[in-house]
Image 1: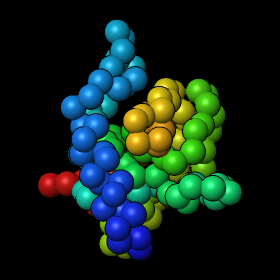
Image 2: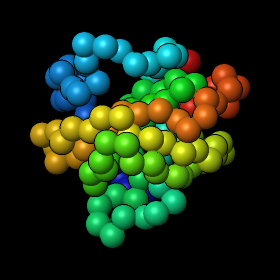
Image 3: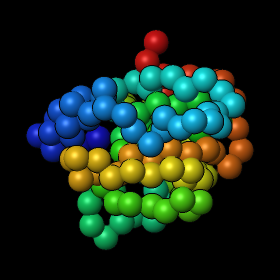
Image 4: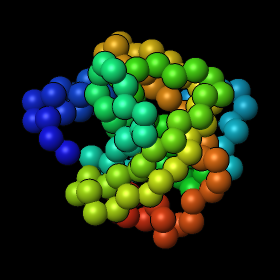
Length: 132
């Protein structure tokens, strides 16, 4: 993953948002699996590359059933995004279909998305993406 100062700037903005309430906090929690912290640099690359913004989303948390991430472009509730989940070193790539359940624009200008995978991933499929 290239980008140097752009990546560092995004990490700084995300770090500042870590303790702010986001749309993921709802009265009813739809999650079926515990979300875990991904390894630094885990990202999602949509198959359809956006015309503007970064061509990837930084994964914030992940489970066998879904993930939340920061993207530079907005997606709507219910929208399905096909792409690849990619480890920070690029050695592990898992094709996924991600369905957006919630989205919120954050102070940095990015969009925070949360949603589910079209089909659950196995524990061994997400293990390379976890911070352990």
